[in-house]
Image 1 (cartoon, rainbow, N blue to C red):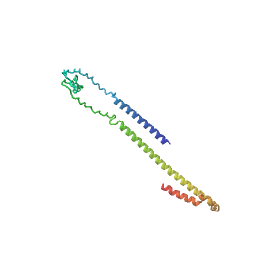
Image 2: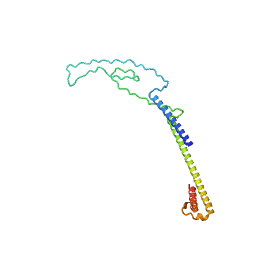
Image 3: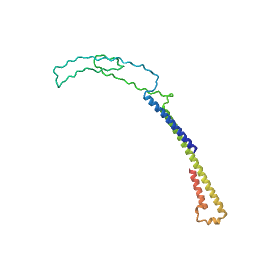
Image 4: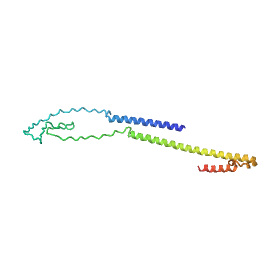
Length: 203
């Protein structure tokens, strides 16, 4: 009973440790994902250059518009701009720049190579080992108890056989008259004790 109580207490402690580690991991991941991780790195604000006004190109108005081919004059153009490109030239349209997104670096493992996953694996392995040891100890204890019980039963059968032998030797005429209770005859008791002795030896 005490070993079961100790096992329950150990399991409760392990569950509390796993929940605490999971909670800390979840809060760290939420903080990291939302970008609130303080790396003590301050970047100076980038001031964008003043926009360049578009060059207005006068377009001639058609004198006789064709209803099938209508010309829509263009009064503005698309100008690509980004701080990494710089100020674009006014030479016309520019292709959209290719933006290279830097790969996200994995967070360095804390505690000299131990991260949450390896700690969880170690705790799980320790719990499984402890559980297996407790089950092995229980099996050994049950086997010892079973052997002790079989020894006690065999002793009782031998004592009952000897008691019957002594009682029947005191009054052999009455012992021979027993016909309605074959289970207490001396031969039956001797046979039962011998069979149980063989059974206990094989177990």
